[in-house]
Structures are given as structure tokens and as C-alpha cells.
Image 1 (tube, one colour):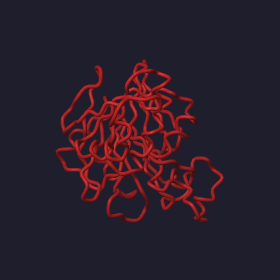
Image 2 (image 1 turned 90 degrees about the vertical axis):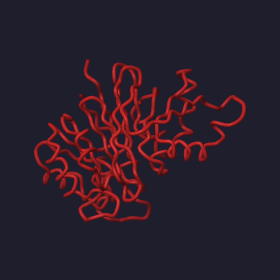
Image 3 (image 1 turned 180 degrees about the vertical axis):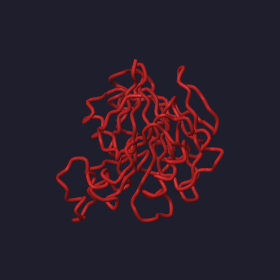
Image 4 (image 1 turned 30 degrees about the horizontal axis):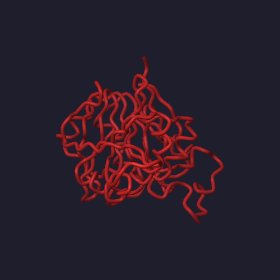
Length: 255
């Protein structure tokens, strides 16, 4: 059985278009230039793993016509990657199963503080059951699915990317050590952040993303976490190598 990977969002922290911006990308009528905050849904044998749950989660799931999330992997504590947690309520009611969230201790501490009402006190109607699971930089299993965290640096903040089978997903990276790159090597599909053309203090730019792809040498690669500064989707895609694609919201691939 083929497994599906769905890009729920491919934008940066402000999304695209940005409020009040009249640049060509923000004014584009090409739907591929409209980007919600970055998130990925991986469907493996009817088991759905979500990577990050940002403020656009509700809209993303409605667009995808999907109402099932079994587990969530969190890359880091920034709100554009966690702020949609409250919108798990209807998913829990529909499926009647607790939802497992996996992240580092500091990430889970931040989530617990931000959404304290979901974790403290007695149960009541309107409160979903969510299990927080602490992980470290070691492989672990969800059911029989092996998850390998990949340590990357988001400027000075250590965060996780994840490898699941032949897929590696990395967002908000500016630096990856050689030992962590070794975890990525052999991936058939690499999804990597690529913010813009100009250099940035905490994100790969286009050149840096392409250099990493060339080093890892996957069969195919997809760029995500893209800002309006990258340029129009169709223009950028023409410049990319044959096996590299500018991802867009609701793009579905099989692995």
C-alpha cells in the first residue's frame, strides 16, 4: 500500500499573502502562491501522523476534507507550529480516541503552559483528551512506525526535524551537523525549509536548501516554509533542478 503525504501548509510564520502587502506574490491569483503556515500530514496504513499544528490547522483540515489525526510530532515551540492545538476538539469528539503529542520536554512545557486549560483540572464537555509524550534525540516508535528525530538549529534554538521511513521533513533549519545529516542520507524524499533568496539569520535560503539537497542526494526534494520574498511559484519552479519542487498547500505525494 502506498502512503500519502499531504502538505497542509507551506508558508512561513506570517503566511502568504501577508496582511497589508501589495507585492506581486501577495497579490497573485495563482493558488500556489497562497501559503498557510507550515504543516504536514502523513497517512500510513490508515494511521495519520501530523507534523506541527499551527494557527491555520482548522482551515487546512477543512480544505483537505480530513477529520482524523492519531499522533502529532512537534518540531519546536514557536506559535506558528503549535497554535492550532485547540482545534483538535472536534477531531477528538468524532474519533473518541486520545491524541498523542510528541515533543521535547521544553516544547511540551511550553504547550502545557499555553493551553493549560486542556491539561489541568477535571474533564468536562468541550475538553479533548491529549497525551503529552516526551522524546529525546533518539529513534522511537508510534505503533510500529519508526520515527527518527533530526537535530537542527533554528538560529540559537535547537529543534527537531523527523525521518519516517524514506521521508525526511525539516523546517526552520539554519544549520545541521554532519552527524545529523547522516540520519537524513538515504531518504528518497527530502522536504526542507527554504525561506527566500536572500540570506536569513534563522532559516535556509534557496541556495542553502539546494546545497543541502545536492549533498543528501534524494530522489526528489520539496521546498517548504516559503515566504513571499521567494518570488512567484511558477517563476521559481522554472529555476529549480529537475528533481526539486516548490511545494504548495494541499499538494499530495505518495511514498
